[in-house]
Length: 236
Picture 1 (cartoon, rainbow, N blue to C red):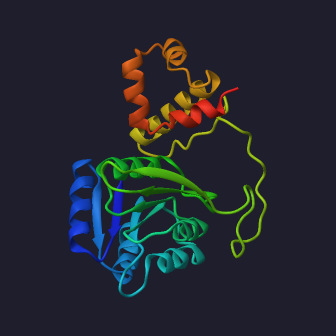
Picture 2: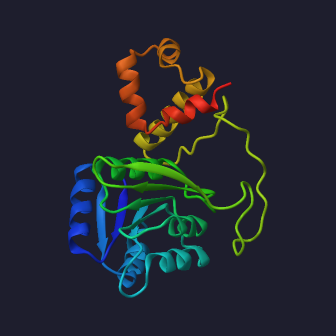
């Protein structure tokens, strides 16, 4: 389980997120402003930060930029806002945010974003942000590009990254210096994404290949946060 820092000036939001994530087995630290967030980050070195954008003293984007500029962005950061826009999401990603959640945050979207953030290494510079909008009954997730693929945005060093092969690859590297559950989930997610892409998203063929019953396979994919629509598009 992870240590998660929740930064939000609203007491109700802090309490709700703390209760939900504590029930999932995580250790939660709370901060209501940027000053407390800075101190908590230094004291506990969190595995993940949930950071509100609109705060009364220093806003979340400014704090994110501050951590990035000082080399302190060593953990994934999920931005939160009740008044977010696509431009805000793009800006957050440009400065290193892993994802963007729009309030009111649903339980399903929160847990999925946290799970995905914890199994991924914190990006040096993100190329896209997951923007989750709407409450119950009206959710959608849009991928928002934040610049040319493989090129760091201006002000981030201007380095060019090597092109990445399309689709999941048969040989991948995994960070084993992490808790067993996180390492296992990361491997299983990559494993199923590879076979889904190879079988063009066919659940029947993947079930036969992996030796799982289809209903169990579907529940497993949902638990791991595997994007079934993307797997179909990535197939040969």
